[in-house]
Image 1: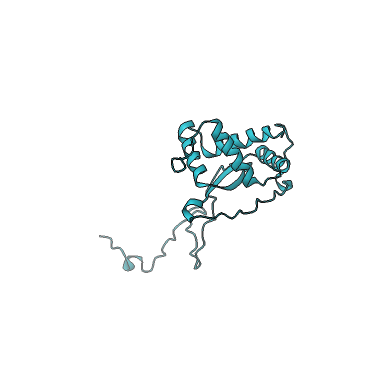
Image 2: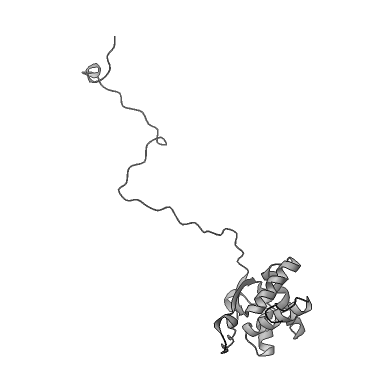
Length: 173
């Protein structure tokens, strides 16, 4: 009967385990490192520009009704409204598009003071992404009309909603 353990190996050389370079365990480190950060949104289009405007509550309700009726999203509606109104004020459809770093600065629309209850005057944020061509047309249309993007987009949406026969909210009737 062969015994195992220290007594069996006494006086004999214990063969060392043979490891290949790939099978060696990694040396233990005392500091823990985080894995490299990965971007959350893979494939996010880099050619779209953010457009954030505030719209009155009644226009937001009309926009919601337009989304339900037409099946288009707010971004598609904003694109169509801006481009339709830009065409109406005389901006050509084939306007040159500047590079992202060469985009001209658009003056913001000054805030208008409104009086009344806070609930009546609470504006809603409309955040969409627009193509560089729509952005260039918006900039040119703002120069032609003398309005800032806030007023221009509100007017464009109002005209587009009127064309699509989206009624005003029941609160105003």
